[in-house]
Image 1 (cartoon, helix red, strand yellow):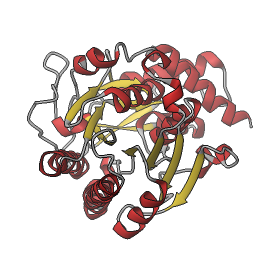
Image 2: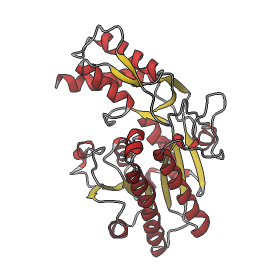
Image 3: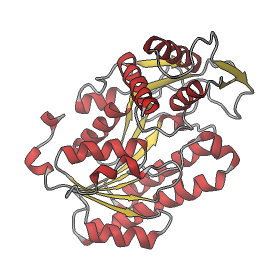
Image 4: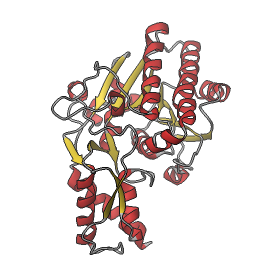
Length: 341
């Protein structure tokens, strides 16, 4: 990654990050600190956050943390004005589809109103510091905004948005708000839309960690419908490296899909994890021929997601360095280490 980054310049860069105690955000912070950038982590520490992810950075001179809520414009503006960032990167979001079905208002509050507050504050701070042209606001999006797409016809950045649930609709709204701030006010916005991430630190409500949790408890994983839903997967480290490169070299007003060649049915992920657990002879319960049970499908469940990521590879080169097999094997070791400690 360093081949695309001026290391002397990176040491002077200041990155205001929201949601940095979450899964993807904490990995992002790890990487930018390694590059010598200064980071301000603004995070409400919701149920999906974990301060342990960034606890080791307490004594890091390049790191600062503030427990704050992006739904409060005044709070955001006060912290951002003090920090004077070169980049604002918005990872903060309500992101679990099941929760969006039962509690839709929290998703519009955080993902739409919260993003609007960040955009307004960023615009004011960049203008006050006369840095509008060289700085960037990075909106972290999701492939789910495109709705059901198949491997044979992946979504390009210019494709119609067809979200199927409140979560993806709220993320689509956030993306469109960011792009509108660029077109109307000239705010230098970049939107990235990533496929499914996996790796250490992911919240237990998500698919892969939930599978591991069920196996540890000796319970069968409740899989929606037939389990034949197809997802495109990228390791979290590859995703954040791609985001950093795009942050530093991408063009304002552009959207970049962050994808991978890995497509797997949900039911086959369960089978792969079961094989790994049995092979590694862990303290997880093994020996079950079938470690899942089929339950009623989720409302508005998309059968498949697929994004074309040629645009970002033209910008930064290859973005996939970790194979699913090695990434999943290392993740199994991560959970086994937790099991034995």
